[in-house]
Length: 331
Image 1 (cartoon, one colour):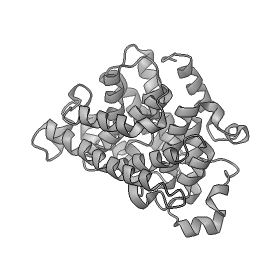
Image 2 (cartoon, helix red, strand yellow; image 1 turned 120 degrees about the vertical axis):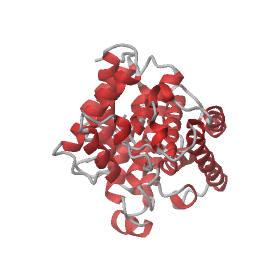
Image 3 (tube, rainbow, N blue to C red; image 1 turned 90 degrees about the vertical axis):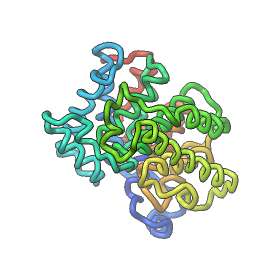
Image 4 (cartoon, one colour; image 1 turned 60 degrees about the horizontal axis):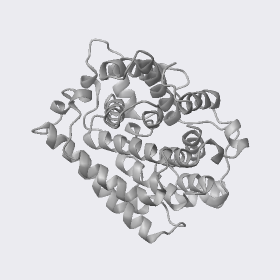
């Protein structure tokens, strides 16, 4: 949780800038420093909103779609209306939250079915970190939280894949094993539609069947894994991370480019964050995901104490992480 916020804060000032602009303003990428104060973007704010909703749902008992959707919906709407929501929030998130605020609408009606923006998965890490969930429940929760705003099947699949990757790393998977493990996960889930968690969401698309809907999302994730393999094979740490895996404005590219930055420097978390922040695309979301992966792999001790101590919302981030590390899922 600290890692994703640090990545977010490091990448927030560099978003919408070219590599040349970033280097002109911040110096060589290996020396990019955290701003004072260490302000985060909507990425961390929405992660916390999801974490609060998920924690409230688990306090009521075993996780179910009904228990999860209500609290997370309320937290997302509260975030959208908060005066602190002044960090260039995504248009899809804001449009969906405005509709989610209408209690007469089912959440499937509020979901933006054609959007697969990275807002779907920049905030999904809590689904990977809370204890006591089965693999199927984690996947369902990851996809449901995405679907509240971003209903495109690739947004759902990329969120599921992001949570799965974070969980693998938290459980001790070796970084070098990840590409093969992820391909296996994509293949195993390609034709599975989480009807229990998503209900009739697929009917709002133009897909003929729920299986076709699911296939579309997982196939795009498989394609971006091909691009990730190409980037890892080249292993050019000085190149723009977005050059092969994409700029990260959409969910599968944010996942792949964030993971690329981590895999280029799996034992150098600060270097990985700096590489992610110095990218030509959605730098804060890319670095946010890089930080989540690095933190899951190396733990809270991965980060410079001086950085971690001044990250915005740090107290709440650490409290949630400590709660989950202790094996507690409720309040």
